[in-house]
Every structure is written in structure tokens, then in C-alpha cells.
Amino acid sequence: MTVVWINGAFGAGKTTTARELIDLIPNSTLFDPEVVGAALPQLLPPKRLAEVGDFQDLPIWRRLVIDTAAALLGELGGTLVVPMTLLRQEYRDEIFGGLAARRIAVQHVLLAPAETILRQRIAERELPPDLPDAEIRVRQWSYDHIEPYRAALAGWLTADAHPVDSSDLTPYQTAVRIAEAVGSGSVGACDIVQTPEPTAETVAAGVLLFDERDRVLLVDPTYKPGWEFPGGVVERGEAPARAGMREVEEETGVRLDDVPRLLVVDWERPMPPGYGGLRLLFDGGRLDSAAAKGLLLPGPELRGWRFVTEEEAAALLPPVRYERLRWALRARERGAALYLEAGVPLG
Image (cartoon, rainbow, N blue to C red; front, side):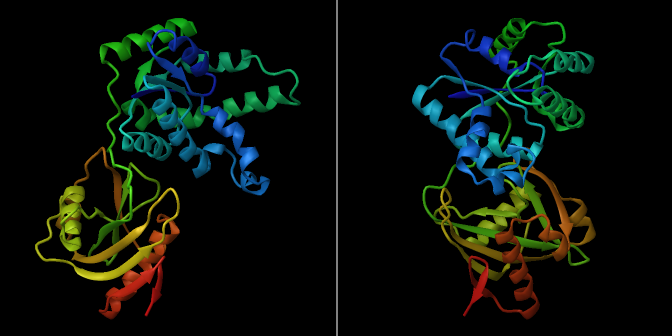
């Protein structure tokens, strides 16, 4: 099962190209995530929708895109052609990582017409005549997203996707180029970690590493939103502390010689679709400046790292992980481990 994801700026011709492409790739189906966005006003209260300017900023949209794509492929098989603009790398990582976790390969294609052509297409785009102010709103929306597209193009997007210059091509000609690139193997599967979806409660071990200023190390995983501590799921038959040590070496290149000291045990309640489980945090100690500068990250799994203060961590970590960190730091100060349930100390 495969997804061909057609990315590009608003007005690049993704949807019209996708409609042509499904006639060129055998056993392929069109899935436009816009239909998920259009359904959200029927699912969410207006207050929640008003909190964001773009439905892509809603976690439920990203989750539904993953689940719907997987369900369609489970029902139909073959290839899913998905025309959708993705300009934020963390959203791309979350969606492509979620598909990879379901063993669905993603071939990422970028329609990249010259900006002058793109602006011309936006200006000439036909819009629904029955929507009040549609022309102003839709065109302005497209123009406003040229700058974020340009920024993504100068960074992660060019390195990640297979570009197709569609400046002088019709949608059909563009689709032919994509079909040829996909068929020849020029567009490989997206290089992103495949983390299997849990089927039951899990035990995970994280390790806190500190720099010489006592700031804590956080890493930015590609396969889920939000920053995290080095660590991961404990494998069958593996001791939790040893799992944390293994994950630290795999993720950062730092080899811990001594078994780290336990700081907190936190029970994370099940919140569908998650199963929850036990989350342990250990004290991996302080890294000297040479070790801190020598941190190495595997590209497909981690996007970046940084040492942060407790206050800075509050802006990076999801609330439940921040509470876990906050109490782990208190346990480190007091020299006694704490038991938590959903981030709240008990006993």
C-alpha cells in the first residue's frame, strides 16, 4: 500500500493534477484531505474552530487524515493519491510518520512552478460565484501562503520531496511526469521512522541528561508532535533502566556507563486512540561540554535537540510530559523517587 502525496503552494494545481494521475497509476484512488476539513464544522463546536486560523492546526484533522487514508487503503488497496499543501515540517512528520507506523509508504512529490506562474494561476483561478466575498477571501488566502511556501522551499521541503517544475505543463502533462517518476523509482519512499502503533499498554523509559548549567536535554522526534526526553518503549524482556540507556545511545550517541537513578514512575491513563501505560524517568547525570557538543541525532527519527531550562521546557513539552519533567526535577533535588498518576504525585 502506497500514498503519493502531491504537495505545493495553494494554486499550484495539485487537485487537477491528482485527478489526471489516478488514470495513469493502476489501482489508484483520489483522497482529498479537504473533505476532512470540510467535515470539521459538523464535528466540532464553533468555539474550538475559532481558536485556529487553519484546520491543519487542529490535531483532530491530522489524526483523521492519517486514519482515513489508512482506512481507504485497507478497503481498496493499491495507491492513494493525496493532493494537499503541507508547509509545516512538524505536520508533515506527524502525518507521514503516522502512515509509516501503519506500514504505508509515502512518496512525496512537490509541484514547483515559478512564483510568477503561481501568482498568475491564483489570479486566474475560477471561484464559486455563489459564495459572498469568495474571490477576495480565497485569492488572499492563497497569496498569504506564498511566503510560508517560499520559506519551506528554502529549507526542509526541497530536501524531502521530489520536485516537478510544472510552470509550462498542463495538469495532464504534470501527471505524466509524476507517474513516470513514481514508476521508475525516482520518487523513493519517504525516509521517516516507522514506529508501530501500540496495541496495549506500554512501559516507556526516558532519561534526563543535563549540561553544565543544569539545563535538561530535550529532543524533537519526527514521528509525533511535541518535544520529548531521550528514551523509548521498553522491549519485551528488557529492564527499563537498560532500555533508557540503549535509547539514549541510539538517539544521541551518548553512552552511559552507570545505570541511571530512578526519578519518577508515572501512570499515563488510556486516552483513545492511545493505550497509556507506565512512564519512567531516570537521571542520566550531567554531560561535560565536550560530550554535549558531540551529540549525534539520527535524521529519520529526530529532527533536533536543545538544552532548556524548566521554564523553557514548559513551552516545548505537551502538558503531561511537562508535569512529568517538573516532578522529576523535584525528585532529583530531594534525592527520592516519586510515584505519579497522570502527572500528579501520590503517596
